[in-house]
Length: 237
Ligand code: CA
Image 1: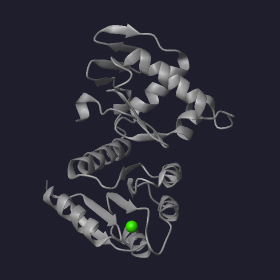
Image 2 (image 1 turned 45 degrees about the horizontal axis):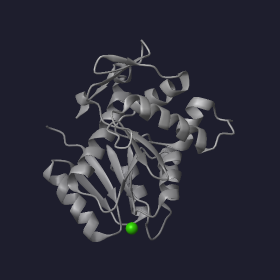
Image 3 (image 1 turned 90 degrees about the vertical axis):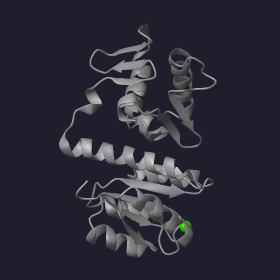
Image 4 (image 1 turned 90 degrees about the horizontal axis):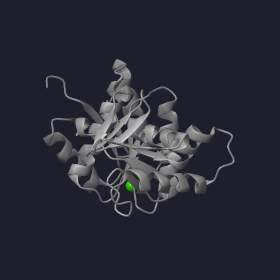
């Protein structure tokens, strides 16, 4: 690795800032630290980071406002750090353009996994890699997007058109959370009157069909109050 990946960490709590810096530096990432929103914004512009870790609870600025400003000129992956109680903030952050979030307190393996997922997704977009069209494979489950075919352990699973749309979008963004709004808009359109109920019903049906044990899902995870996340594909782990 000749040129290290640059990660900007915008976080006002010094102990979390240094924990993150030590974890990332050990993995040969280059860390740029900012302790305020203003500092973070100027570093985002001047240091050209490959990824931004952003704490939503900053003393000087609203984290969502920072995302909005950065998204005005950059598609750099933004991973939000939030407290468990900030569910509305997480949703707002994701709908404003954050790529994913991680909830405090988090361990280093979770942090590194989220970073790898976000970086892989952004490089796939930059290089025009058509990885999203390759079949999704995870623990016996296979989704072939071109053939519109879902199988588990070689047996075909019949999904309705909407169920297939939901599963495909989640699988194409596997490892990342997708908000209720994002999923509803994708399936029922931007002007749909849908609340989350119909999405939940669809999700329950999908789980019943694809999960070996719907009560303990291994493919489709609920992010309470935010949305859903599909397990990483075998190839990307
Ligand atoms: Ca904070």
